[in-house]
Image (cartoon, rainbow, N blue to C red):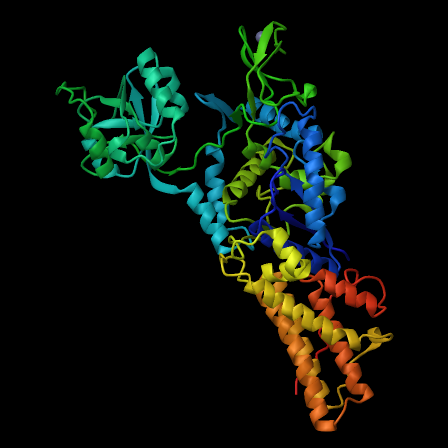
Length: 629
Ligand SMILES: [Zn+2]
């Protein structure tokens, strides 16, 4: 019975160099993928190239996709040189119109489902409805690294408190959040995030609107609270048990603490509210018809996560499939007209309104790179032949999802959250209905950055070779740990691999494959025990992606085999036929355990020994249950 597996890694940028940190992730994932294949699983392991990461120089006469495809050849050559076993038949470039049309399809579909909205600086996803589920499932998904869970929680940034309904003086009901339900009577204002969608209806005064737009246009995360602007919008809210109507103010201080929310400002209970209140003009003691009973509150949570941007202004990417019509406003391009291709992505152009056939224009907006990357785990799982017509309807998605192992780089937690969010949207919209929990990623690990001094990949490859570099990427440190030690790790890996080759070369011969360990003798029994121990440990190491341990356990097995031969010589003067057989069998086990870590050397020795097939087709070694002496 074959099990389906899917090992997912994130995209390299086309137009740039592969750095050691990214290669570390690929080395981890590749070792894991090779191991699963050796255990008989049908493994999908392929790669999406981010070809919108860099733009061809203008005037080159090439379109972006052609240009990217050429750059991609270089990247593939380097990845092949390092022996990564990516299935290139399933790989993709994000600049392929058959791929990016689905980013455009997603945008239009989200817009039609009212999951996308426009605010000052562009289009955003209404992520709000997915926060609670994303938060809840962080603890549920099996096999996530602690650091992956912690990063997801940090990104969602949950704040516990209470919601209640307040009436604005124009009759609108506003849901207001507070962390201090006992101090509601002391409230002095209602603070709004500039990103709260309800706000737009109240921005009648042009000067106020201009000031709010200014708040929206800037990133305020690094500004001290004392310096954050507070804009009164000239609207008030009546809150039960509060003596007078409370002014509504807009401030980035709300955004950075609560996300897109309306909060009750209570200076007596919250120091930040106190800071903000000092900046408000004192209103007179105009008494209000007070409802003395405090409002009915329900426990609520707020998440600080930003809404995910769906559009980007004028950057290189697929054109945003929406046109501006004088009569109809923003009109999405009908799904059957996708993809919208543009000779120069991100250029403004004149077009016709799909709704009224009147004159319309396409703004210089493109699909945001985060939306482009937020469904690549689905694109890669869908076979190329189905990508043009039915990207999200492929049976392969049902077969492959959730991933069996996801390997993320140091700054890719947000990308994981985006993928989780888009998968939930697609589940609710139908295409991914089979993915009940909306989680496209199974076991996930996030690795740390890595550098060997300031040596470049090319220089390290030149000096030490591909296997030594791969082995060192795994050997240097536990995957979660950053590594910035010297290139000694690469030298050490090279010394070990050279020593192994030197040891193995004179020992491999025809008939090598049939070697087995005769357990009649104590020394041979002991060697068999070491082999079993190595198999058990390396298997567990690679299952858990503890490849730093796997490399050490493989190194240790070579030491054990050497030690065995020395002891036999010491005891018997020389190795008998059965002793040599045992040594051969142990060496064969070593080659099989080495194959996911240093595939070139393992493959080379395999061939030289005249063994059947390739080492990659060979079965993962089994424990023989020899009793260690
Ligand atoms: Zn129109």
